Image (tube, rainbow, N blue to C red):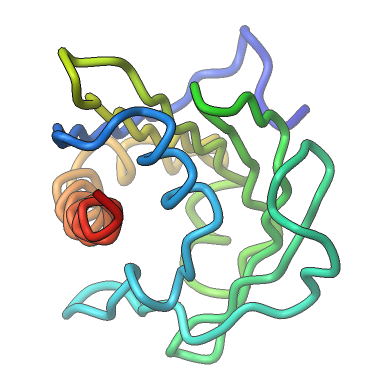
Length: 163
């Protein structure tokens, strides 16, 4: 486990509502093509492709290696998968600037019923490297939150195409 209950982490959370049922939102978002939703901006690279995924993205333990448009990559491993309620994953081994800021990240998606639709919550929990928490809590946080929200909005758009 990357993060323990005594670790001081930096969490960044974004939300989206959709008229799509939780099961549909989950079924579209959990296995989504990351290159379709993580687009490069002024501060962060997009995802260019995935390598090393030899199994379907539907159970704890499955791993893959997202590659970014700047040539860097990271290892991503599913740690929880409870359809249609949520899933969690860990990101470790960054080969870009994030390696200098964080030992890793725990990501978590929750799909909560909202009437006939869904309220989606997505959290990135960074485990900062020593002396780097202030960077993640300060100037980094609003930039990353905006990047996440843009990606989540694209995920919701994809889910709504399956209504």
